[in-house]
Image (cartoon, rainbow, N blue to C red):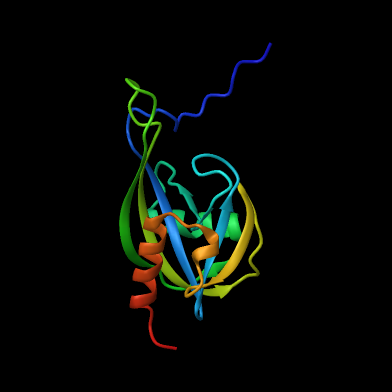
Length: 151
């Protein structure tokens, strides 16, 4: 008999640090569809968990390349977001992530799903409604768009 798989990030004893990237290409932003919890099946920004000893920008570039196959130029710190999913009564939050979001412009690679991602899409920033994004994702995309250099 095999032991059940334990997700150390579920019902954590501390917040987990996640790093996200708002990758821009012209008037589009790269989105991914998540392949596992939290928010499995939902569209989101690429990113993932920071490893012990890994600088935040290194994590951003690694996660972006692993999940989407693309690279961006210089990264700019964009926002810090708390993503807290309530849990069962008396157990605390089911998930708690502190997400550091960066933004950068696409420089290389063809977008393709990788890692725990099931789909990728270059989405027009003025037509994000069909993707059902989390309000915080919409907020940081708008912030990246407002700070992007003029073409």
